[in-house]
Image (cartoon, rainbow, N blue to C red; front, side):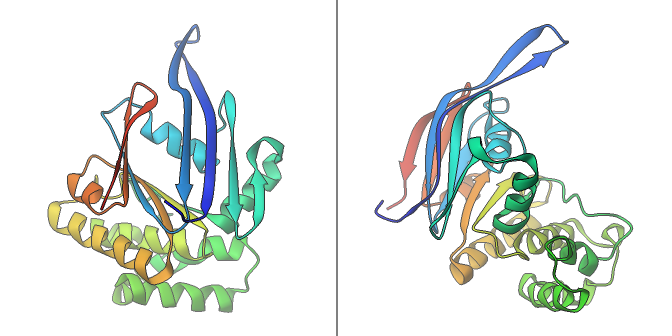
Length: 236
């Protein structure tokens, strides 16, 4: 690919303690490059390290070894040189995350949940509400915007979560099994929404998935096994 590299990770290693005495190696000297505007599907069996890799690329976790560099329109963020406070700002401004379970705050409406990252970023309530309502229309839940998460269907909850991930116009969006908790009809609708958002806003998506339908929509498929990327498939 000739497009600009937005994220580059080199020699990532990660291990976790098991029962306080044994280290389980989850990532093993893994390197990857993500190009601006592409949709990358990350596949592999459970335990291959997909979620751990997403969390580290998205700065939700830190590697034991290796480093990551994020390039946002010429502004370069070297993860090895960023403080915890700077990571918080980086995530809020430039990184979106969609999880398998929506993680919407139960006491707030769909609109308020979507507004939250914009308010944290310093937008006024009026401006955050305007941005959120625009996204609510795009993701198709305008009629449900004042409902609490418990009053939404699974598909509607995930649409709200996607809108929340996009409200600050992030440079890259990581999605961890975004259709994994949905029935086929809702999963198909959420996939089509993600593809439409990618086309409409030229967003970069990295999606961990078990879904062959999601993978078939990607420009690249990276297959993981035992903490490594073992195969790369490029769509023609």
